[in-house]
Length: 268
Image 1: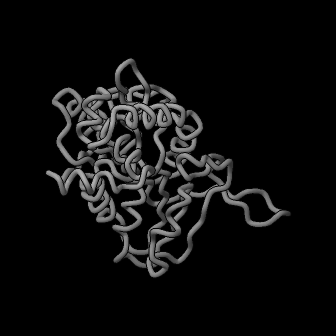
Image 2: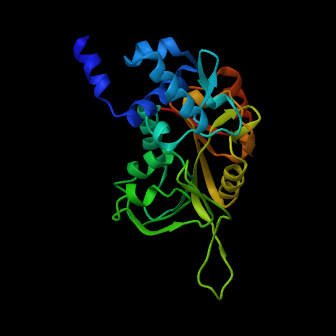
Image 3: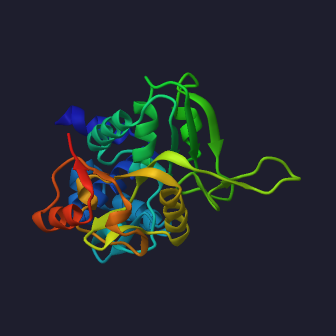
């Protein structure tokens, strides 16, 4: 116990706050006392961390604790927090998604930590054409995997490390933007329910919807914590997807809705 406490105290504050935010997101609702006990720090330290995380829009501060920002429309968690959440589940989802893709395919990936896991899972593929708004993917994917790699232009959202803009690519200053088509759209979403797929940000939802419309086949990626939930911005109705890739079977009601919409559910 003493060794654990000393290790906790030696953590960098930024690392502790990221772990704290991930713990709140996974728990849904926690008290300051619970957090202080779990992380082995003082109540005053937890309060300061929660106040800063609330200002950053990562958690929602309440009297005596905090609640997950996942349930609050329009509030996004930072990428450093999301990278620590559902790691094993995202890797399983990514492996299944990568198995759908044939060498030589054109693939569109949206922003998110699940699609970062997909980029890593594609390491044995070759000759892919990849287009994405995910600014982290060029650093995550091996150059051996792709023939061409494109980043969609637009405004940069630093909290998600992604661009938001039209799903088009410019050739040069004298030609109009080129609209694209792809074999696969692999789209990570924030929520899935019987009404469809949704996310917290309106601009992201618009871009994801365009990606789906330009794809021959669409696989929606969502770990099981995102099932039977709905967020602010609708991305698409269920029938717009060919696959839902998740880490656990959906609830009976959602499974029925997906079956009626013709969506194949893939799980490990």
